[in-house]
Image (tube, rainbow, N blue to C red; front, side, top):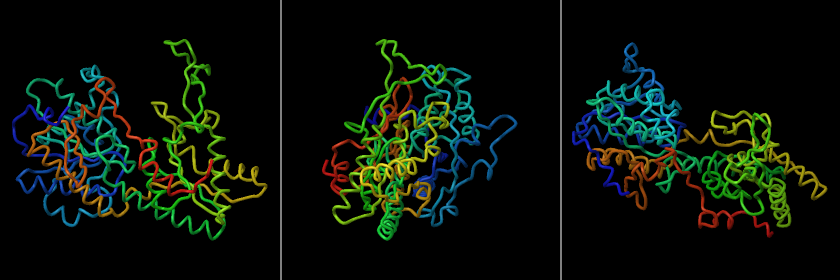
Amino acid sequence: MSAQTSRSDDPSPVRRVAILFAGGPAPAANAVISTAAASFLRNGISVVGILNGYSHLVEFGPGRPLVEGKDYIVIDSQRLRRTRNSRGIMIGTARTNPGKHVNSPADLADEKSNAPLRTAHAALASLEVDALVSIGGDDTLKTANKLRMVQAHLPEGSRRIRVVHVPKTIDNDYLGIDFTFGYFTAVETLAGEIRNLLADAEATQGYYLAETMGRSAGWLAYGAAMAGEASLVLSVEDVTGRFEAKEPVIDPETKQPVVDPATGEPRQRKVMNLPEVVRYIVAAMRARERDGKEFGVIVVAEGLAEFLPSDYLKGVPRDEHGHISIAQVDLGRSFARLVSSEYEKATGKQRKVTGLQLGYESRCAAPHAFDVMLGSQLGVGAYRALVEEGHDGVMISAAGQLDLNYVPFDNLIDPQTLVTVVRYIKPKSDFHRLARFLETEVGE
């Protein structure tokens, strides 16, 4: 589907726009917000900033109107002084998700399931906004799409609010855009920490096993490892071949294997061949020793925790969707213990391996110049999509020399499940192979 098919059916002009940020922080957030706001303002369109994501919108009601300064702010030129390079998020953020009970097109018509979405729409309508600029990760993209779609089920005469979305994640795992704003800042921040650890490791003849953010894909781990001169990097994309194993899926209530009704066979889940992965890391350490380097930094993406065999996940809390609490796994320290033990077993010597987590400190770091430029272009793109192009239901994207393009939500979201698709590093791609060229050659 081309962006042409996403043009709004509503020919009325945009007179007032709301900007909303949801999910985790990312560097250059204010570049997006401020340039979008400035673009609208200079063309006579008023701007409101919704404070703290959807958290206040879903509380709206007859006895709970939105209050300026508490639930939203009016953004004018005075608020936009030197904001483009500033840290943090000038309108705040939250993880409130009004679309979490809508999991199919049928749910969009169900008044109980869509109630939070209808409330959010009513709150925006009370501010007389004509369009919403949504900024956030894949969950926020899904919410933006649902907010757009639920309007078809509102009473006749309800205010029509157009929706466009700006992709945000330091994980860079977004389909439809080459690089997300904040990614390079996060990479540079973590790379600096890895270089510090590398100097420490060399001084003490030890190893650090650093766990980075990246639940679904390895972009951040790979970028930080390459820029930080890490000795080795592993992510979810590497759980293949000899690093892959299978285990039966166990029902948490019955403790019995889950049977696939289509085949009658037990369902299998993909897991890490953990002993093989640990042996590979130790092999890299020994290869470095042969080169006279008795130190190093190994980087692993936190998403590998999802691929741990079930024996390693006993007692780890899970959310309503069955996803483990990755922070509770403490993958870096867990791997460090296994690697230290395997190293001693293989060599008869002891080597200190220290595990630690990296990531949160990168989310509000001072933005990298490229991220400021990219974020600014995406903010301008939100204006151009709504006003110049008349779009509704598109994600703002940029490629090449920051050339704008507008990707319809329908190209990014499954029409039946209403979920997005994760963009992984392609194994054997040039980006993937670059890491292999830069890290320690194991020779296996």
